[in-house]
Image (tube, rainbow, N blue to C red):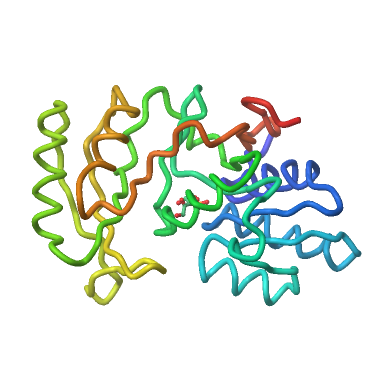
Length: 236
Ligand code: 5RP
């Protein structure tokens, strides 16, 4: 038996999530390679006549959707969505996520929070027992970035979390800027035993815009594996 590639498993998860989309839905479109599969597949359905209205979580996704002629709106025009479909860098059995590897965590969280449901699409390698193998992205304001970073380090150490905190950079070495014009710190804390506590403490630091812990937002995870797609949570 040939084992499908991670990319094929991502696409299969996206395909299954797409089967839950129906005419008239207002959708949030995620960011990243898995979400890009979903947008691609959705574009084909739109070409066939499916009527949906979508909000993109990044300029990258907006450009892809526009090319595919998927009808787009904004949260200002359409502040309530039926369903957001997005990827993740990690998820656990309680549908808690780490996101932001693609740098879009703030808009992804805003869009997910404006949606009645959030379906995560991922290949099986993203499933973990405890969050933290993937460095946690923390989006911070550029003003006072060093002070904010120190705050984060002290807070983490106080919670027993240690590890490198790296300012994300572009291939040319310039600081990476999010669509909102902020920096990202990738925090390699290792295992995060109490994600809720870390999430609330991080948000309380002035200068932290948001972080990649998504808790209480995902309603289902579509997991693409070698034997097909498994669903965690409620995908009804
Ligand atoms: C972007 C994200 C992505 O969903 C996450 O990084 C997963 O990406 P991919 O589907 O390419 O593995 O959070 O900010």
